[in-house]
Length: 565
Image (cartoon, rainbow, N blue to C red; front, top):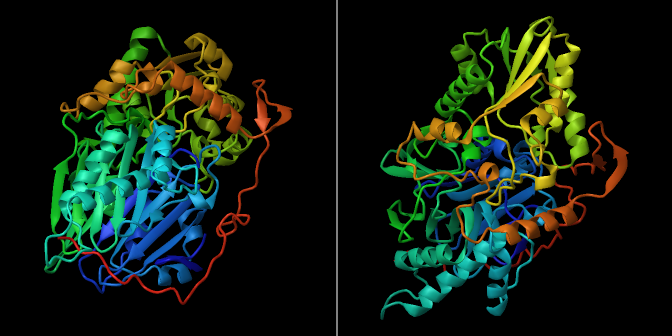
């Protein structure tokens, strides 16, 4: 462990990506949030398995910030000795989804800057104008230590908060280290004006409290809850409501697009919408794949939306294949289970579990490296052969990205001896990259790129294939919450909700991703693609020297803790 200024480091990317974030504040200054953060991050582990981090502090004067982050799962990163160091009644937690070039523990979150007041950030999403913002920060003589756009966002906020405080100095006799909530909301407003893309943010402001806000399109999710503890009220922000449920808190509502919610250390809550015309355009892929089915996001129970996706799929199957001859409907675990169940019910066919999942293998879609992705499919799933033998089987999956996993699963099913295999996807063909926080591959890596549905069916080895229509997918969600303005469905439609994403942007992104790919081994897989060399994953706490150990136990405490005016 080591200290940098007032920051206690217990351990030692690239654009931000799909992540899980949580922030907890308990009013009791003798209380601790470390266990609550650990439990919430464990529940959010499906949103990121590459790295985890936690920062805590106490709201009493002079409290230090205690930070632990490393590559690995939540249970690997945080050990007993770490939890004993992570003391305090306010804190943030983060789990990271792996993307190309983001394996450094230095880019694991939360991230910290000491001025003004000591700021920590947990960020989910991706900024689309990062390079422009880097130039702005360079002109302000702000040093960025990583390639992470989360660090860019943190420093933009810090810059704007400092500027706001300078424009409205304390009144005579007022503590010069105080910061008014108007300064904080003004800084959020400037951040939203400056930063384009999709982002949900939780910030810890030392001596002030927790701050949560979303981008003006509400692309990335963020919810807010609370719990009564005697006379005190405790608060939580989270990417998904399931973490709030797990902590025994009550879900209050979603943080609205461009809304900032400030929770003071004394328990007072202030809110402000920081954009003149926000719209709710959540990422449709959250409902298709990423979110847990027991979560509620933007007023939509995820499970309910997936049931409706399955019903829409069944209706399309009956239109396109009225004499389908399906004997049994089998989900590909786990995300597609709800859609497959309702699809089977609507078709009037039996629903059967045909695959058993080994839950100790990482989800293949979020594993870096195509070679490891292929290798782990058969470790991850095994067939129940009696459910396939001699039958016409409809396989239901949430989506088809590269097609690598689908092809392997179909081959496994064929080995079990079915008569025919049909396949349907609860999502439409994925044709474009997602630039707002999901690491969907480049266009040429997508199986639907320049292929017809029939060609894709032949490629993955099925008798026929049905994709969900985009209109039906969006209606499956909007029918639960008609107040939604629209969706970020860009990976299906190529229509992006922020105006800065155009053909030139996508071409530059694709070129950048191509350069970031690992060197190819020269081995050719069954589909003709060269497989990337596998890089062994570092054990938690062993990051090949990327986190330099610094230690100065004589470092003075923060002399002037901040307090909210």
